Length: 377
Image 1 (cartoon, one colour):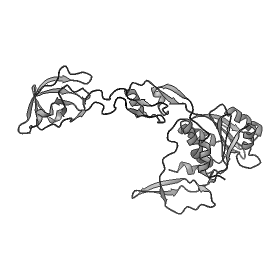
Image 2 (cartoon, rainbow, N blue to C red):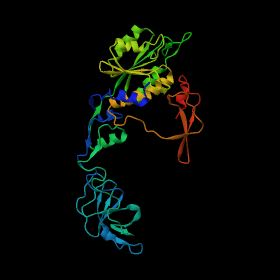
Image 3 (cartoon, rainbow, N blue to C red):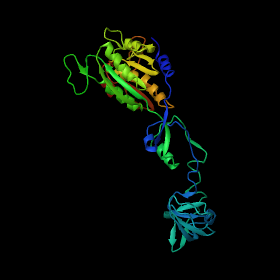
Image 4 (tube, rainbow, N blue to C red):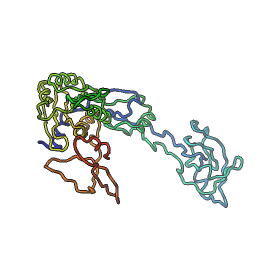
């Protein structure tokens, strides 16, 4: 059996980013940029006030005190969205509002709550520092600066930044379409009451949810019974998608037909069995240029192998720069046995104590105990 790292390397070396498409700005939410975004203007394009107050020349307030305030003549008013009609002269002040451009000659703003107004005279009780409460030109973005790189996932802040730069559309990577089929005579789909020896099909839905969380587009191919011809036919149907996933039927039992079905498709098999627990019987191959994953049938095994192998592949296909989740180191709160030599992937809850993370198993770690995934952090 090969290691998890070798298996992942074999998988990622055989998948590539998909094509791109241009979409409207809001449709880019959650998608991955396929082009760099540069600022063509300074943001802000002019020095403006960050407060409602008065635009002044700082030198006019150098000797101001509460006992002897600086006295300035109020000579104008600048609401947001307007430009000053004249420059600010010595001994003068402009009434100014948040976001309004500073008049020529002004270098600072004093908030309205810090001053007294007597008619058209402004009383400033303390010195004002140059640049105080002023947003300088280009404080946020500088013209010519690259502000977003390809591979970045677009969130609400990126949407706002693109809108601020006037981008109504943006080039993004196409989301991978993922066909999913579960195999097994024992499975019945939602809406069907299980008969004797049968159980509800949960894998299709947990895997579809994982595809959605990975920013793919799932396509449900339903349940295929344990018949080679049916499984092969369902796989051929799934090759119309960008990636195909099956669950169950990948071990060595009499009714495990996935590997044989892939062989009949003419698929090249690149791995089978990985030294891990749960999820040892995993198959990965390619057919007609499409990656194909045969995941184990136990619910936890299917979800864990998806997380370790399918999710990074989908993220690479979707153009993401970061393929893996962040990781952290935690100490075990109790001994965790690991029988055998395979690496264990366990479900835990986390606690933070004195700056360290501590982990506790969720309980029994059997590969059929889906609740261990639900209760895990």
